[in-house]
Length: 255
Image (cartoon, rainbow, N blue to C red; front, side):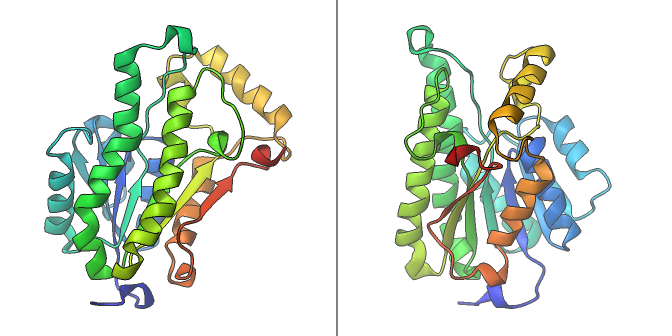
């Protein structure tokens, strides 16, 4: 088994939800660092935009919830790169609704994207990650940390709490294989996700302004800031960190 964390070889990185926001910024950050990246997403146009000007980024248009998606993604990465060093489970979905208005199919769709898909993809990637002593990074949410409530986002928040639990559990299960598992829990980041979840541009702008007032650093995050932390947690110098969930939220989760 090769200890590739401590060498200078070009790494192979797989990022789901790579067409927008944090996924796009993370893909470009790895590519700028000389690594090769496979971005996965359902919308070809946004994946093309992510890869534009970045020859180190390859694209795979796929629905990560499809039964054959895990095998397709891993096979594509191995065909393109011959290895997988980092898997970033970034794709997520959230539709706000109070419990009394919760639609069963919307809830199932959210749980499938946010929870089941990362489970199945990570399972499929284990042999490749074991070969490189690689790292899994789950993108969680600071909004679901600790004892906090999140009205109208019960499904999304519950799926992220579960993802944090999987991060800790997988870290222990996969440690004998040399695989590390960590998570980054962003606070509110200006990615346009609110609009994609159904808010109007005005509603989303108002939400961002309100978040600035309840965040100690008095601003919201930028996708590039989250991407920086993802790369730090997968650097060779981070080799002793596993099972941790790192909040990057301007202090909002501790107030």
